[in-house]
Amino acid sequence: MDSSYCFVCGPKNPKSLGFKVFFENGIAKAYYSFAPEYQGWKEVIHGGLIATVLDEIMAYAVGQIGPALTTHLNVTFRSVLHPNEKVLITGWIEEQTRRKAKTRAEMQRLSDNKLIASAEGVSLFVKP
Image (cartoon, rainbow, N blue to C red):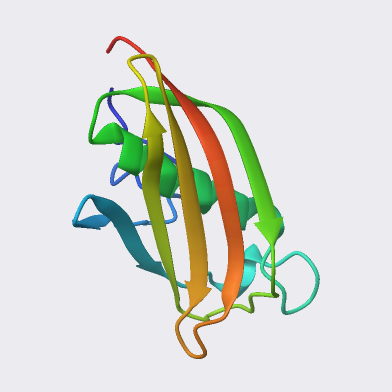
């Protein structure tokens, strides 16, 4: 599946967040910091964007197996994230069957290792 125009990671999308993912031991990872343009309340990054990048990192984890679409996403917010704070986002597969994968993700602030948010998801494998 072509993701070159993806809102989160697409290199051909001029409004993409520019999210860059790498892998370590099968775990999808990305470092990121949100610009002030992505705040909701003053000095607070919008939770919808945090949920978006957690979904994205889980999609990358599942993408190692094959193309899939998110069917369920549950996000728990733990702490406020401010603009320009650098975070590490990680995503991995918890369980997998022939048809679907259960995934988890976390976003952790690098300056104090505080957990910003965590997510659980289910992705359904699709034919390319």
